[in-house]
Structure formats: structure tokens, C-alpha cells
Image 1 (cartoon, rainbow, N blue to C red):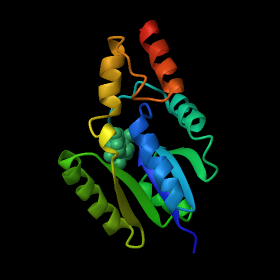
Image 2 (cartoon, rainbow, N blue to C red):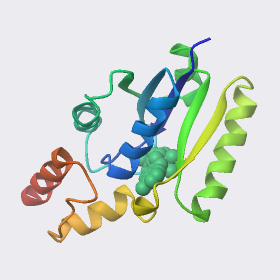
Image 3 (cartoon, helix red, strand yellow):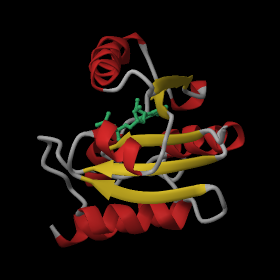
Length: 161
Ligand code: ADP
């Protein structure tokens, strides 16, 4: 049986921390669907289409990675692409409680879908989309934190705001 994983998130925007998890995951799973869940209560900076384009651009070197979006329950998306795994990244203990909650809930909704966690690369343990947006707003150098395409997109956003 092929191992197919769904890697869900807001990706607003995708950072080097996300990309590291996707790249490492792509060596383990036969296929990964990176999926933007657009049902989150957070007000995003980038539209779903903008986020899709950015993720596609920065994962184009990974042939077994596909990018998509969805605004219903993750387990439904997973079923629709025959995925048997969910892939998430873990940064710090502070991520743990939240991740445990959604993992348990997803298990109630679908017992056959296993969640896998990968520890962040230590250089990205402090990195989140929110932090990147916060510092980008003040024109700080973010070239080590996000791919070039994202750096350019963030500059444009804050120039026009
Ligand atoms: P969500 O709003 O669902 O947490 P995010 O886009 O913030 O979506 O994150 C998606 C996934 O990527 C989550 O599993 C998150 O823990 C993981 N992630 C985010 N930043 C990093 C990072 N710097 N290193 C490793 N994993 C990360």
C-alpha cells in the first residue's frame, strides 16, 4: 500500500520551517498533499490563491508533493485523496497540547488515519508565520526565515499597506 500523507496548515505564508518538514516528509512518504485549510478563524494576510501559488513555487522541485486547499474537515479531505497519514511539525512543548487535541479528535473522526509528527530542525524551532509577518512589517531581514518568493511577496504586501 502506498503511504500517502496530508500536511495541513494555514501556511500564511509558508516558511523555511514548513518547507523543511515537507522536504523531509517527501523522503518518507510516497506522496504528500500540502493542504491549506481555509476554515481557520484566523484572518489571513495572504489569500488562499496567493498561498497556493507560493507553496507551489517553493515545492516545485519535489515531484511527489501536491498542493491544494480545502475548507471542510481534514479527515474528509484525507479520504478524498486516499491518504492514510497526517503529517505535522512540532516545534516546542507549547505545540504539544494543541496537537494532542486535534490528533485525538481526528482519531475519533477516522480511526484509520494516523498522525505523524516530525521534530523541527533546531534552527527553525522559534519560527512561525506570525513571527515572520511581525518582523517583515518592520522591514527586518527575513532572508534566512522564508524562501525568496515569500520574502518578495511579503515585501509587496507591506509596501502596499
Ligand atoms: P496551523 O495554523 O494549522 O498550526 P501552520 O501553518 O501554523 O498551521 O502550521 C502547519 C504545520 O507546520 C503545523 O504542524 C506546525 O506545527 C508546523 N510548523 C510551523 N512552523 C514550523 C517550524 N518552524 N518547524 C517545524 N514545523 C513547523
